[in-house]
Image (cartoon, rainbow, N blue to C red):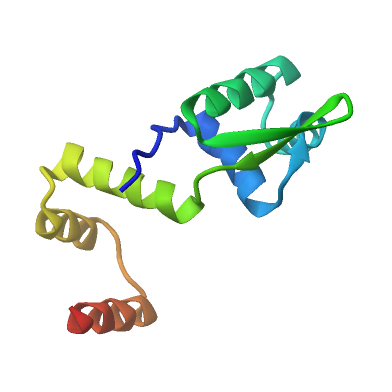
Length: 122
């Protein structure tokens, strides 16, 4: 199993842009993030460089532009983040995590039905 990079919250925001469509030049990524984030363009470029350094993003040169693309899938990163959270917060045990969320959040009847179905599949 390949080692997945640890991605910060800000880096995750950049990755979501590229998971939704890629390859993209930095200018398009900056333009899309301007709609939701108040980041300076240099901040986005720094995040892109960090993600390349971590092996989460790759790039190809297209003239003077660099076209960025993900090297890891969203599902892989979500799985790694979920595992890290479960391990860090609940000692790796699923039962206390489920109990915690069941106590704190109310599930809709549809969500309960889906959860039961998933549990019965195991």
